[in-house]
Length: 283
Image (cartoon, rainbow, N blue to C red; front, side, top):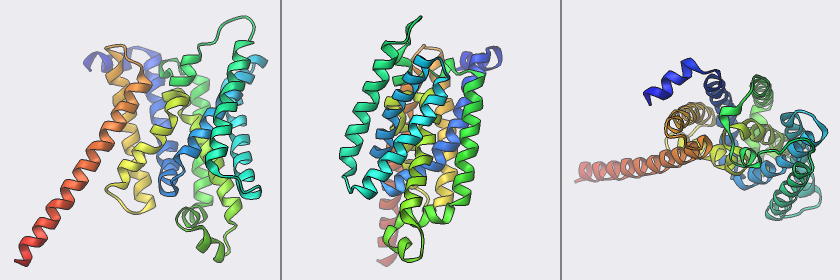
């Protein structure tokens, strides 16, 4: 761990990785809260896997892969929302279709990219040590877009997340807000790609928010706690993986899973203790 901390002050790629962890945690904590409350984690996973198509096409055309990822992520969010709301298709079918077709298209374009071979594993499982200054700029802009979107539509997102029918009766344009939420999820997915890759995005999006939900009830507090947890988990995973040369993304997810399990155990223990104390006071 000491060598990992020293590397933060010695190597620029470690500094970039640290900044990427902090930037990703902001969007992850905010949007992950809505994903957990609305229980659409697998829908986020479906959008995540379509992103490979955008990155593959961008590489094939000689453009920035992050730009391609943003475009395709937003398009997939719009299509998923439109097909579900207008064509009344089940979400699980849409997830399977977008998940498989998006990855297949991305692999095809990557395989046909001339000049050099692309490390497909770095996209699937992430490689935070390869984050560039341009990637950090994209991540900062994505964070700003997510924060502005949530501030402007906070009440609408809140109402739609808990009760769509009641929100509709109160005059909220539920369909429009739902699609906006999917777009925010899409942007967050792109934000997390460099950290844990496409395969593990869903876990990092859900686990910190689910952990925060064990201890806090309000959306705002849940967001704050989730952001802080995401920062601690991603930075700790980065430092822990450096010295033994472990995959950073996988280490982060294992750590996030361990923290989630610990939170459940502590919550259950606290509940049992409260019941015993209450029962003892009634005797």
